[in-house]
Amino acid sequence: MVDLLLDLALSLAAGAALLAVYRLLMGPGAASRAVAMDVLSLIIMPMMAGYALYSGRMIYLDVALVYGILSFLGVTSLARYADKGV
Amino acid sequence: MDIVTLFNLEDLLICAVILVAALGAVLHRNLLAAVVFAGVVSLAVSYLFLRLSAPDVAMTEAAIGAGITTVIFLIAVRRTEEVEREEP
Image (cartoon, rainbow over all chains, first blue to last red):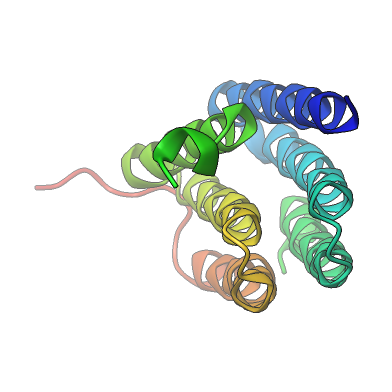
């Protein structure tokens, strides 16, 4: 039951990632693309944490941690580019 | 182990995200958008590596692909030009 619910939650999160990719594809300008990339990283990071719960291996949480820090770096540099250059 | 037990629905959706973002990275004329698409590809591929139980590869992919490559490509796009020219 718990596995089924986690599977359902991860599938809903992946569908949300697909919607964010639609905004990334269509969005006008750099600002909406930066926001879409931020939304995508904020969706995939809890998916990693949920998969760590699903599989019971705690090393996966470290991957989610590194991923969160570095995607923040990427989105911040993108927003800085949209403001006044890197 | 067949393909149905190896991949379930969320992995297929993440694969769709990777496919759409890779096509956008190849086909888009605006280079800033192409850089963002390439970052999204490496982010989603990192989840796929995690799903295939390779957490060290996933961590390296997140560090190199999402962090370093996006910043270096952004610096390169700023120093050159943002929109790709038509072929002569």
